[in-house]
Image (cartoon, rainbow, N blue to C red; front, side):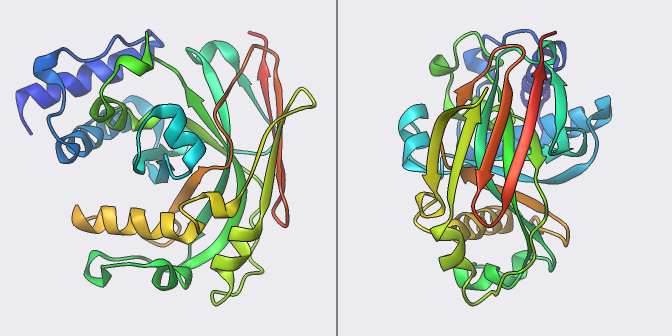
Length: 269
């Protein structure tokens, strides 16, 4: 921990909690490597927890599909934290004015029923399959909380949890066999609608060719940082569609076959 990292975290959290569009960090405070960006993310997480955003409950993974890598011009996965205050259930109603520019993504999410420990690394798709206890259709709420996100370095986006602002879960589905889980999830199709109009669709296989590859990626990422994924950890594996930005009053529905629907409404104030 350095004074520069502390100041960078303070600036990110201040902009995020005040809903002030963030211009970015001055050059002297920008993380100089991806490893430093994740150290800064940890500090942002701790400050958000201290500000009442709740405990760490899981992780989101961005840029696991070609459509999102092309949209953000980042060619590798990036992780962010999910805190308890942002964890919601289908049917949630959110105030539009709680965000700078809210958006949604159609996500596959999983819950771990056995932990993934650093000592077990390296992980692959087959190794993590046995730890999955629940599978969900989910809406990730994202927030373009920047003056111009395209001008920001990837390290700053990582430090600020890669646009994450919440996760809306559908029903937990548990009728899965570890031996066929990768193939089953890869075959699923998900569709998103806003105000009844389709805005995107994709398949599970769009996530790194196999959604469990994304789970293995986050397990290996955490293992390198000496962080365990305990039982109950939620992991949102990636968006099947390009981010869709919303207007006040929009109603969002997604459905992933075999996983069911998820609904979210943004109030007009």
